[in-house]
Image 1 (spheres, rainbow, N blue to C red):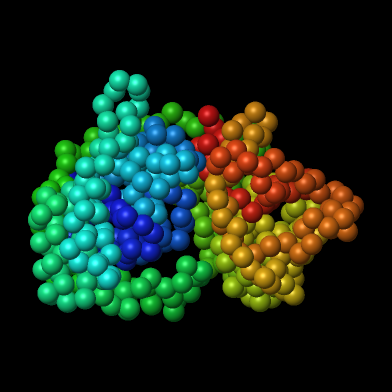
Image 2 (spheres, rainbow, N blue to C red):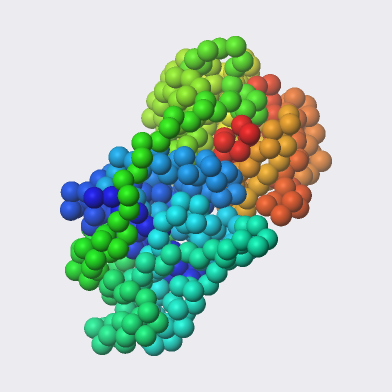
Length: 452
């Protein structure tokens, strides 16, 4: 068996992630090998996917990477799977510029069908024109005079259905719109995905496991999986060609002239926002080893230290209590050690998170006071390299632009670089901090974008 499809919706908050987790687990329960993917830069849904499918989920992003890279990733990770399931982002055609970077564009790049999840809350027969429109809507041709491009809508699964009678009306609407209806999920508050600001504690993993199992049972009971798999069957994925070795971008600060540098990556409950493609690239460039700033008391020998994003604010007290690790990282930085830190990793390098002391490499204080969302794609030029990434955080730096803060940074030998722009090219005030061989900031960068 070889099947593939992308789960999309008309809008956000429709139930894509809930349905995706349930489908992944239901298919896995049937003994199938399921490879999950996520459109866009989200690194939280990918953790949910991994727990449901038992395989790492892979981000497919139309802004941070090229179409050829997306196709290569899809083939590389999917050719050994029985079923490939891609969860979309936002609404089907929502991208950073109209449809560009959208789930629809990824579906067209990969030439895979779309399973539309439609919220049935407070609606019945009126879904007919909605799903009819999604089936027949066409994007402009790539080139003038070319053919219009249509996403292949395989069919619909309804979410938040109130009753069997309600579902009968929805199913009739599908029939009249000429769109296949594969089934439904009942309205159930227990199926709501928990808050997005999660760690990976055992309690939370157990909570998610219970949710995934519940939704999988609902999928098995009310979604026609046999018909769905038959309709989305595809030719066997060819074994992908080995991609040309991606050159290591200079911005990362990996040592030059060291054939297999020792790369040390923080990964635990506090630091877990990692793009699978970035880890693959690091493994190609050096020997990767993982460690825990929470639990380890010694910093293993390394040539390059990566502190990714995560939830240091939720684990501020235990991070502060591990004084041996904090001092080891500060000593490593002071001695000229190479560190690349993003978002949560950047916060860990600050003097403190709130009142909890951190590594003190940078004379800054991160805070959750007055927390507000900072969100969006980012791009910049660095040493002639075009870099792209994504910013997503609620914390901020206390008095970030105050003269006293800038003076403290200058006295500590920290350079502040402000050259980032939004996806539309507008300047954003998101700095990068450089101290000796330390590079740190809030943006999560995607390595392929800087290797072009």
